[in-house]
Image (cartoon, rainbow, N blue to C red; front, side, top):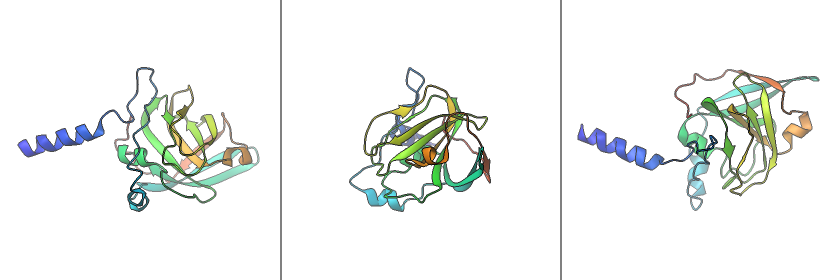
Length: 179
């Protein structure tokens, strides 16, 4: 019992307030992993599972393969230390509920488009071409449940903006994602 209690205290102490909502209701960016050891970030698994996002555009459907991340550790790591991402690939962050979200780009090496998506799978807003390697907070005012990161310039090239509808195919079973 005592060992279990000590283990729980250590786990919670390590979590701190990273990614927790601040008083304004937005999410505080999670602390990046040690930038002096990028090889750890590159070899550690990130995605719990891959899925497809299908965009419903006036010109037809457009498919993107995405890594799904939903645990605090994988949400924190995200796309940090990656030198490139294949075209029409991305990372989907899944949260338990809708709230204002914000992200930063420290230790993220590639420019990204960030799509903030509501529970009904409609894009609420897009942050385009987020500059890498900064602590600038990026987000939108509307509460969202999902955030999809794609290569910078992807949304402009494909005409994706607020109001675009999409759907998920082969979505993994959602356990207990972060709030």
